[in-house]
Image (cartoon, rainbow, N blue to C red; front, side):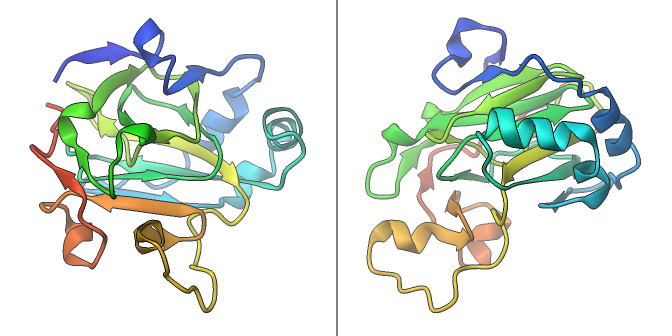
Length: 209
């Protein structure tokens, strides 16, 4: 898989590099969060991160005053496994070099996507990126030669928490919903598939090595 950069022109359909914020204190606080040696850990909302001044700045400027949450995703990962999307942009601020595996929501047909459509982008340590609403993504991958990653995840408040009570699944897209504001498509090899997630990715399960 060709490894590109988020600073390349090829990243423009998926998102952009975020500038104009002081993320230094946020990354310092992120360093105190756990980073498992195997697998990943995701925390939708972390009070120590949300107590920093950048929380209000991101809420008011990046999200136009919408309620937001700041959490993290830390650990080690090499495979795609799944792709998810939200009804909004997601902001990632990484403390370590990491790789984003992304694809376009517009390429999905009847809940299915060929993994040949997935592209890999290196996000250097200290970089913040916005992933657009139509960008399929999931947990980052460890950069080649890296020893894991820590990344801040900013989303509208409530995202990736419990499903709406009494959710009625009427359409195919309803079947993809696995949490609040989270629609997920799994590869048959993914652990999430064994747990009942909708299987719609076909082809090779991309690996970053």
